[in-house]
Amino acid sequence: PDEPLVWVWRPEAAGGLVVPRVSHATVTGAAEIALPMTVSGRLARIGQVDLYSFAATKDKKLRFKVAAKSLGYPTDAVIMVLDKDGKSIAEADDASRDDRDPVLDFTPPADGRYTLAVRDLANRGDLRLVYRLTAEPVEPDCSLTLAADSFVIEKGKPMEIAVNVAARD
Image (cartoon, rainbow, N blue to C red; front, side, top):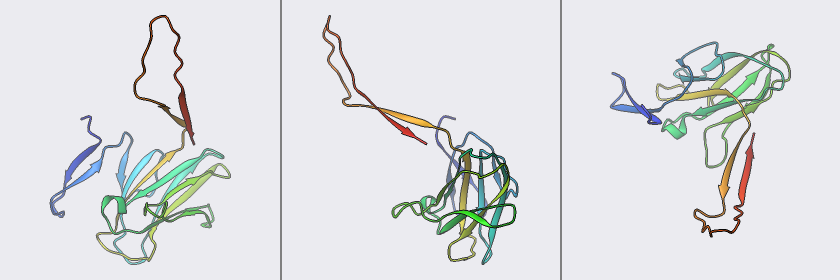
């Protein structure tokens, strides 16, 4: 129950699949999502675009992450946020040269409904073009590090320990 990964078996899959354990709702093929949410999808048809509708609040930053290559699937995903008129207002392809899965940070310009589109870069379709989409609000966070992993404390003497703080988001 405390492991970050779990095994799942499906009749049409050869063997078991390892999937991450998440602490929020997980659905398959949802057209409307409420954040935070993890969605599993498959781009089985040529030119298929999966669309997910969501409500957003002005200036409340959101993060959309697609995992496919990192899970061993051949999907080369692209994600886009569309406004109410279907116009693309944000897009992401590969996160970096070494990370082939896209990450999109999106700050809504106004309150309202938006649509997230997920497609394959080359518009391929195949049963193996699987992806996992995670949609969540971005929360400020930080990490703390010390200059050393051990310290010598001398009786009766004060000690200062430097702590490095790295802010995120």
